[in-house]
Amino acid sequence: MRAVVARRPANRPDMIPAALPTMQPADWRQAWRDAVRDPRELLALLGLADAVPALSDAAAAQFPLRVPRGFVARMRHGDPADPLLRQVLPLDEELRPVPGFSLDAVGDAAARSAHGVIHKYAGRALLVATGSCAVHCRYCFRRHFPYAQETAAADGWREAVAAITADPSIGEVILSGGDPWSLGTPKLAELTGQLAAIPHVRRLRVHTRLPIVLPARVDDALLAWLRALPWPVVVVVHANHAREFDAAVDGAMAALRAVGCTLLNQAVLLRGVNDDADSLAALSEQSFDAGVLPYYLHQLDRVAGAAHFEVDDATARALHASLRARLPGFLVPRLVREVAGDPSKRPL
Ligand SMILES: *Cc1c(COP(=O)(O)O)cnc(C)c1O
Ligand code: SF4
Image (cartoon, rainbow, N blue to C red; front, side):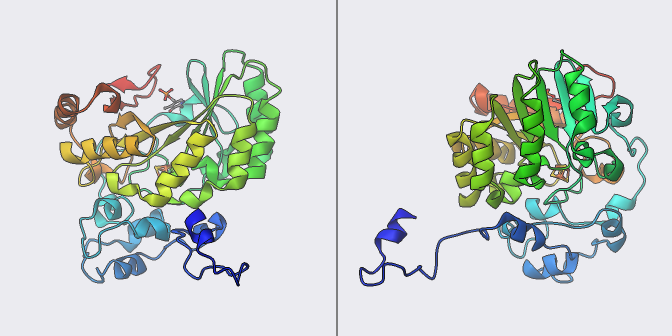
């Protein structure tokens, strides 16, 4: 930006350069509204009209396509097997019933303790802050979750804050969803203002895919909110493939680090997306270059509609072993699965 300003002609100090190097529309809400929702438009943008016979309108009716244009721009033109495209494109295979794949794969219904609060693990309460996401990932374990009734923000956070206040064992509040950063910053500040009065809360965590899929969300208002929070903040982003990082994403990560956030990445092991050692190693390296350490590599939750993404455990372990053999330890994510009723994610 400085270089652009310096090149302003001296006689036109107010001239705004025609081609500012912005990769995203400046207003994240505008970019949000502008997301691609029509599968045929998505394929046409990629030069793939009529090239994907497995495209399914019925799957899209069950869980609609949604993908920000900045993310589409990172997909490879003309490649129906592109790993970013595969994460968002509704396909026939989703409608095939597969034994063992169910609607509530991780036992969330049983673990909910208050309006939008899931308290499964010691010391940590997870808030289903909202049901909205900027991108719809086909493998998502919450694709069948009854969001409308169950979000913590719906009642001005009242029940969620009451549940956290009443339980002194909760030291960490995790904002999850949906994507919590799909809420406006004032709504987030409304929550953290209430949490600030609870003496046993010592840490805030945010699980969000927005810095990856719509980095314009990391705007000045969000950064000012983060800078003013009274606790250390951990931001766990979600990228599954190295090509999900671009210059705009790197910029968002640098800005989050500059306000003191600790940045981690969780990925899901997905067939046809990242189920080879080269892809996983590149993801770790690319994350690190952006200032993000790998945290978890999740075995897929067995949610109805996602069976075609599953990688068997033997393959997952072999991939993880080859990551250990080629990367420094801090770039090897923990390979885990979520098992209903367990006190933590279960290492494989
Ligand atoms: C995954 C998860 C957490 C966080 O677990 P960590 O191992 O601390 O990352 C917390 N609550 C719920 C309900 C979860 O599913
Ligand atoms: S961003 Fe996360 S919560 Fe939203 S659809 Fe993707 S995996 Fe699911």
